[in-house]
Image (tube, rainbow, N blue to C red; front, top):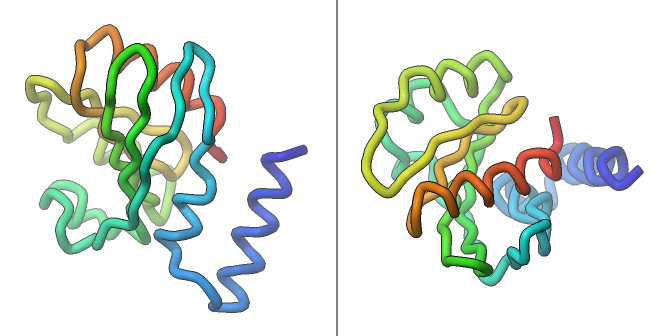
Length: 132
């Protein structure tokens, strides 16, 4: 029920033009996740500052969030125009130390910091809470 309410609010705000899409993306991020994770900071991200692999797929908006819990992990979430675009960015993403890419529906994300096990734990807790 919460998910459909969130999408309704997102659609209403888009139609009203009263809030930036990055701010709306931030509002979709859960405050608490299984495993003891808590959202402690978030901010909009200008899409022109994203990596070229992401920018070339035309992200609609982006946001950065900090989750604290068993470790501190910074998550950058990009709302892509289609789920196909999110998957394409995920497939083309070049692995790098300290970062783990993921996607869920139209969202592409990068979790950075802590150990690989902690990043995967956070991603597994976060993905089901994100809108499809």
